[in-house]
Length: 411
Ligand SMILES: [Zn+2]
Image (cartoon, helix red, strand yellow):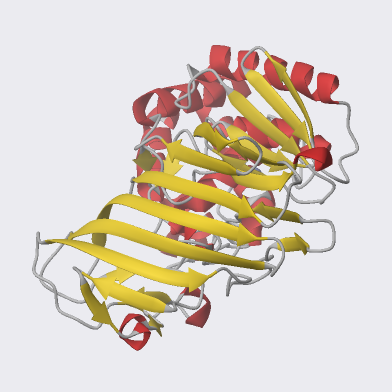
């Protein structure tokens, strides 16, 4: 049964001499359905566990394939808990590389007393949101998150960058980070590194940090980010994340969006800033709905993964190859790679039916206004765009989102 998590609190202590990070985490949750076995996830090896103050063996929190494949496995508590009841789960463990596809671990520099760590999330594989590192719910649930970070065994000052409130307790070595209660498991950005490894620049509400390998000028990045924030605010409405924005630029090819923040290579910045309206402003109701974010961002920004140009308008019949953008199983937890090009192609067709690119931008602004700061589903978007196009888009959704060949297409 699904749980409703109200709060996650975790203390992480990095020992730069031993190259070990120890975690104490606690989550408060209620049972959000009938009596049953609660589901959550954590892609780390649990050392010890307590439920409601009583020790439970880690095997009682083992992963299960819930039907969407082993990649999308989740932990199932081997105890029946009553509908509506409240519980506290406490876990202790050592942080290792998350057990999820393409996940990276902690980068230790034990000789120079340094540690670099990034939550490093991804939509493309299951288990790559907050559950990579901490006990967390799946991404439909909002929860208050409080992280306490401490770096020990070194006099080298470190830096924490996050899209929450960061309170530095001991300069360069301990921090409390609190994220807003509207955040879900795909919202928080946190990056820790030796302070001498990052160049940080704040210009008004925009903070830019250049991480090792970044090929960019911090002032230029701040200027571009400010311009995109102003344009998206004017066109799609005030952002749910508020005024501030945190842009971490790194040397890796991939970028990731967070609420009012990104970690990205410089060329991906516009796409990632846009996600603070679509993806992390209007959030996916479940991980299966994540295709919407990439389809919209690819259609509306200068994205390298787009098949056509930005704001493409192109008639779309029901005779192009079908595609599965929304995986069918309810416990599926990934965005298929086709979401970018095929999703943008679908939106180019919707723009044609809506009366042009400006009409689709207006439809997206109204979509953002209706759902900013909350979740919306694949079906919600079909209904919304159908009303803007003055026709039922179900046959297009069936073929290009759910991969079904409709009778109409066969006839
Ligand atoms: Zn994206």
